[in-house]
Amino acid sequence: MRKSKRDLTIEQKLARGPVDLPFLMLVLLLSAIGLVMVLSASYASAYYDTEGVSGGDPFYYFKNQAFFLVLGVAVMYIVSRLDYQYYRVLSVPLLGVALVLLVLVLTPLGVTVKGATRWLHMALVAGPTYQPSEIAKMAVIMFFSARLSKRHTQLSAPKKFNRRTFGGRLKAFLDKIGLLELIPYVVVLGVVLALMYKEPHMSGMILVLVGAAAVLFASGIHMGWFLGGGSAVGAVLLTIMLNTSYQSSRITSWLDPWSDPRGDGWQLTQSILAISSGGLLGVGLGNSRQKFLFLPEEHNDFIFAVVCEELGLVGAGIILLLFALLIFRGYWLALHARDRFGTLLIVGTNTLLAAQVFLNVGVVTGLLPTTGISLPFFSYGGTALVIQLAQMGVILGVSRQIPAPKT
Image (tube, rainbow, N blue to C red; front, side, top):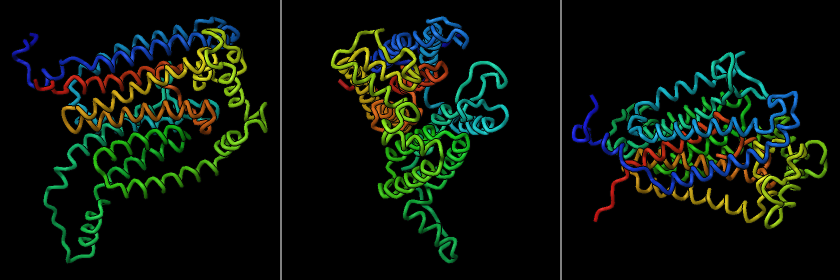
């Protein structure tokens, strides 16, 4: 029998509260605009790809994205109805699943595209593909949030070290400087990043680090560890990029794309041409010229260039403003969350969204080297869209339990 509201536990009653309407409306609005832009950006390439996946159907990518948008909204609603306290228990199994999937990517089951093996089939041997790194991002955030939400309790608990032995004195010293509590997080991050490095997936590594760092920072980890750790990680990433052929070529083409405008610099030069031709008000929705097989990845990673060309500086600015409002609203919800776990969960998820927007727009405008990071809610990709909306469902789920203001 279905329980009446009187029979529900306090946690269940809180989980059935109203979601944050401004955050929900911004997510739906950006998703709707993104769907329109996918139709506009992909129309030409789908039409001319008569022997490819689209079969010459100009609405191929639009119909796929529309299907996954409906599915994603349904998933977002279901996730938002869950009591987010369950994520504490699920964080460890989810992290284990993410690690297993990252390992499977490196086996013959992995799908290779353009020299990178980052995908798995939904049914492992057939069907649509997805990136296990997307699951790993949220798994790391949930695991860190679940453990760090109890940090103050763990720090206040008395600890006994045998100071008569060298090991005991070393543990006491490491505990004093705060390194001892960081070891589990460093180990988890190290394993995840090592598996993603083997794919290779530099952009995914950056996003995992950003999400993890956001949770660690919000939990109160000493700033010194961020300065030291951030410098070390930055040095390692720079070394990897400079010593990896495809990464170093990206940096070279980013620094001077016009030195090879028909080769490595083609993508960035065409993006700049699209943005500059849009001007203040744009050439009009659907009237982009660069999408006619000039701009690569026009409906995926570089869709924002089409946005700038068709909607101009004003239209692109409004979209960025909507993203800014969504991100600021997310942090507002984090500040008002019911407990520390909810706060850390939103901070990690919201920072992940903010980083993706910043990095994608930075790449498209030439501010940053090409990273292969998509624009949330806009770039084509069904499974990525569903996962992004599920992440928004997590934030909405936490918003359901925000205590009502006292009158």
